[in-house]
Structures are given as structure tokens and as C-alpha cells.
Length: 248
Ligand SMILES: N[C@@H](CCC(=O)N[C@@H](CS)C(=O)NCC(=O)O)C(=O)O
Image (cartoon, protein in one colour):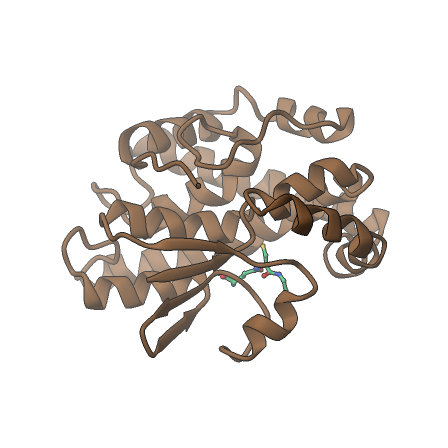
């Protein structure tokens, strides 16, 4: 199997983790942002990664990839078989993909796009040097696109911060009473929430070599949540359930 990714993306980490969790060998293929529009749209309806390619089969979206893997590799199921638990998992996953995943992306990109070297590392690790150089050429256009798509405006970022904080509070209450998000075992709900939050916790088991954030404002956002019970829970999910696999 091949997995098309942006190496640093939390949605891609979600799909990678599901594959690793099941012990399925795969080749992560980093796609160049901008050029990915053509590569990905040739294969799937939207332009987003992750995209899983298994022979003739193409699956787009981390959530769909987990459904697909559970169907084809039912060992270590991530989706509960019980209907109520399944519905609860999918509802939480769907909600937190947006409330955590999309908001974090908006908040962090607001300032990190001012650091081309870091953004280049995020998108092009581990591509050859020539592709990394090409990245710098397209960066001014890419930077504008990232701002328009994900950051939008300062007011949008403020709203993202409020929504993110509310989601963290809700999750904090949930895990104060139980070990896992839904029922009493590790499911796709735990994997999804932990993968979305991996961008603020930066757990050592995460396969991407972050090397620290270059921007004080982005770092201050991470620091706000460093000792949050949900961040500690994310660290535990990574320690207990993420099989480490280097990305190269
Ligand atoms: N709901 C999708 C979201 C994936 C997503 O937003 N991917 C971003 C990277 S984090 C992307 O590919 N953006 C490029 C684009 O939209 O063309 C999933 O779960 O996979």
C-alpha cells in the first residue's frame, strides 16, 4: 500500500497511525503542495491528503481509510462492532476533527507561515534536496494559499482559539471519568483525538522529526496546554498505542 501524505499533517498522522496500529506495511509518499492538486485529483474526488492506494483501490480521507482498513484487516478493529459505541465513536471523531484539527491548523499556520524554512521542512521531509529547493520557489504562492484557506483573518483565528479551548474543556471532563473516549477500549475516537492533538503535544512517538517550533507565539499556544489533562492523556495514548515507525 502507498499513502500519499503531507508529512507533518495531523490528518495524515491519523491514517499512518491506523496502518501502524494494525501492523500493515505501507510506503508513505510525500506529495509536493501545490503540485498535489493534480496528483491527488487524478486519483480521487477532492484534493486532500491522506490518500491510500492499494492496487486499483483508492481511499481518500483519514476517516474513510480507517473504515477501509477495518473492513480489509479486521484484526485489531478500531471501529467498535456494537452500534451505540460505533455511533458514539464516529460522532466524536467527526466533531473533534473539526473542533481540534481544523482549529489547530488555523492557529498554528497564522504565525508559522512566516518561517519558510520550517514550513519547507514540514512539507518536504524527507524529499531530495532538489525538491526542497523547488519548494522555496513556489513558497510565496503557497503561503498566500495557506493563509486564504486555513488562517483567513485574525478574527477567524480568535474564534478558532475559543472553539479549540471549549473542545479541550469538554474532552477534559470526559477523560476525568474514563480512560478512553468511548467505552473501555482504544478505538478510532482515541486515535483521532490524539492524532489531532499531536501537533500541540509533539509526543516523541510521533514519527515526524519536528525539531521544535521556530515561532514564539506558536510555542506560547503549545505552552498554554502543556499541562492540560487532555495533553497528558494524548501522551499516554501515544506511549501505549503508537507503534513507532521512523518516516524514512
Ligand atoms: N477530512 C479530511 C481532511 C484532510 C485535510 O484537510 N488535509 C489537508 C492537509 S492537513 C490537505 O490535504 N490540504 C490540501 C488541499 O485541501 O488541497 C481527512 O480526514 O483526511
